[in-house]
Image (cartoon, rainbow, N blue to C red; front, top):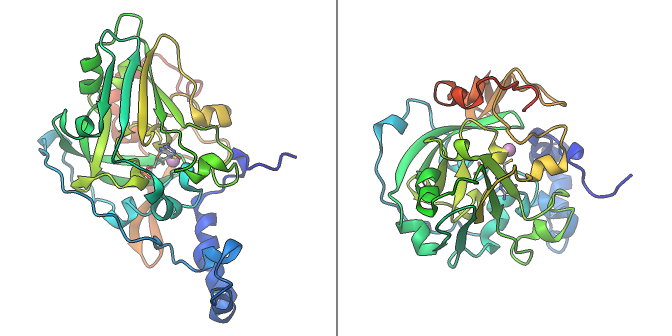
Length: 334
Ligand SMILES: Nc1nc2c(c(=O)[nH]1)N[C@H]1C(S)=C(S)[C@@H](COP(=O)(O)O)O[C@H]1N2
Ligand SMILES: [Mo]
């Protein structure tokens, strides 16, 4: 048996929450109180001390200017901001949903370089200012469905990936787009430790077919809830592909490379039988270990309960994207 954490060990979010909240309750206030007493509040006991609150003060996030195109507004109930920015997956900062908000402050985003390279006529290098100001920002309210069977509705701010790619002029050999997250183990504890980082290979990498990447829904987010993106959500720039499972939405991107052949992707490398290249949301194609037919709506219900709702084909965006997959067996290309 390997000692590192395997993807098959990654438990549903409920188990992580069990650790933090219910375990504390089960232990009773007395036992828990002892554990958080001064001098004991360290090491393996440190997770008893927080109630899923970030240990550092919230970062001050700049308000953004953006338009609100009618086509991308929505009647859907938005997930509360504190859930969007406090319940995250960003394994570079740990595996618990509260870890990114707690730990991502070590990520340095003031200086940033994003390159667009490979099969393009005009390779581009963008700095932090370019990322913020070169493209016209708009707000888009998108559903977001994690492969772990939970969902949110998020008001992103950013611009279509197509705007960025067309500036680089993909050449005729370009068929795919490969994305890469920053690799900086000194800033990202999960890249340093197989234990903290869930045994994934880093840097985190993702990919899309070029036609998926150029689809008008495919979005580069530089903000959320009207402000610049918090680090835990993938500052300064992350991908959002609303009809695909959330893991396609790679965070804190430093490189975009146009390629002739399909690029490898982090979760597919880690568990090829569980996470495909396409990762289109599909209630009829179950994950090998759980159903994808329904989803928990994060932030709904109250009193610690969450509402469950049916999952929609292509996460509700079938009218817009089904044509991309005409004639494809969605079970085979999952
Ligand atoms: N670099 C990187 N990007 C990532 C992840 C990650 O662990 N590392 N997690 C993915 C997963 S599984 C999901 S569901 C979304 C979560 O985005 P959010 O925390 O902003 O809601 O980010 C995706 N992007
Ligand atoms: Mo996810």
